[in-house]
View 1 (cartoon, rainbow, N blue to C red):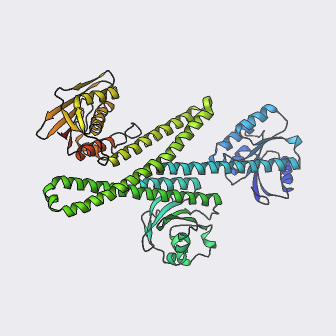
View 2: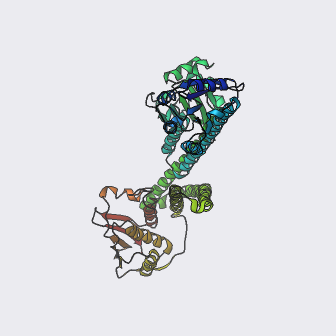
View 3: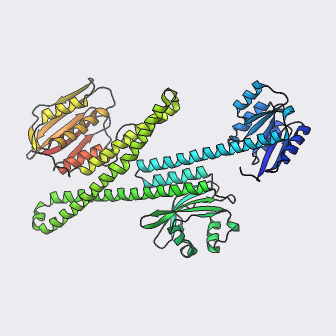
Length: 565
C-alpha cells in the first residue's frame, strides 16, 4: 500500500483505555492516515468486519470470545482470508504466540511493551506484507488463468467452448459483473457472441448493437490496439450516445480491449462493472490484452480447422464422383485435368496443415510434458498426493493430445502416401497383428481357413485389420471374449469380417462412429481419439471398397469390408 493513503483499522478490545492508546499511537503516523473502528466485544467485532478494513488489532482476552477463537472465525470469512490480524495480550506467552501465528495472525504484541513507534511499525508491516501477498496471489491466479485458456486453445478446436471459458474465468478473476466477447459485422454493428453475467444484471448475449458514435470516434483507436478504460461513466467525457448505450446495459465502468486478426479488427473483449464505478488496475488491463491475443489464436485455429473439414468433405465427394462416373470422366478429360490441379493445390494445403500441427502444436505439448517431468524430479518424494494426481491427469491428457495430433496427421495422409504393391498372405498378416496386440489369454481369437493371398499395399491393409481387432478387444465389456476373422470370395472383391461377442452398438450410432472425432465413450475415460474408424473407412473407400456394420446392443458386433482382388 502506498504512503499517505487512508487506512481503516478495526480495534477489538474491551478496554476503553487501551483502545484510546492505540488510536493515539496510530494518529501520530505522519506517513499514513487511519480511520479507527472500535469494538469492545467479539460479537461487535464480527459485525464491523463487514467493512472494507485493512487490519485488525485483536485483544486475546474478550468478555464473550477467546481471542484465538475470534481469530479463526475472522479468517474463515472468504473476504478476510488475507486480512492482517495482530493479536494483543496482557502478558508474554510463547505458547499463545505460536498458536496465534498458526491460526493466521500476522504478528503478536504484548500490551505492556507496546510503544507508539512499535505499534505503527507492526501495523504498517502487516498491511504491506498482506498487500504484497495479495499481489503475488493475484499474479499467480493471472498466470494460471492464461495457462488454462492457452491449454484449452491448444487442446480444443471448438471456438465456442474456448470463448465461453474465457469470459467465465475472466469475470471470476476480475470479480466484475459482466464480461463479453463482441464480434463486429462489416458495417461495424455487431453482437455479443459469448457472455458471462451476474444474475442480477441483464444479459446482452446475441443482442444486435449499433452505436452510431462508434465508427466516428473509436474504430481507428481499436484498430491500432488501443485499450479503453472507463472508471466512472458519470465522470467521463465520452460522447452522449455512447454513454446512453452503456447506461442501457446498466454499466457504471468498463474496460475494452480489441481483438485483432491479420485482416484487422475482429471484435472486442469487454469487462463491465455495473454495481458501481471501478478503477481498473494495470495488471487487469494487461491480463485482458494477453487474453485477447489468445482469443485471436483460437479464432484463427478454428477457421483453419473448419476450412480443412470443408476441403476434406469436398475431396471425399469428388472421389466418390470419380468412381461413379468413370465413363463420363473419359469424355471430359479437360475437366479432369483441372480437377487434378485443384487436388494438387489442396494436397499442398494439407501438407502445410500437417506441418503446422507437427511443429506449432507438438512443440508446446513437449514443453509442457518436460515441465511436468521437471516438477516431479525437483519435488522427488515431497510430492503431495493431490499434486501428484494433478500431474498424472496433466500427463494423461498430454498423451491423449499427442495421439489426437498423430491420428489427425494420419487421417490427412490417407490416400496421398504411396507404398509398394506386394503379395500379401492375409493369414500371415493376421498372425503378425495378433502377436503385436498380444491380447489376454482369456481372449479367443479365431482366424477362419481359406484366407487369400492377394496383391496390394500391405501397410494399409494391416492398419485396417489392426484397428478393427484392437477395437474388438479394447471395447469388450468382459475380461474374456471371442473375436473371429472370416472371408468371403466375391466376384471382384474379397469381403473380410471381424466379429466379436462384445457389448454391441445401438443402431442410432452406426453412422456416427465412422465420423472423425466421434466416439461412444468419453475421451477422458479411454485413450480413444475418435479418429481410428474414420481412418479405416477412408482407407477402405480410397482402395475402392466399402465398410459396413451389423450390431445390436448386447449381441456383439460385426464389421465387414470389401477389398479389391
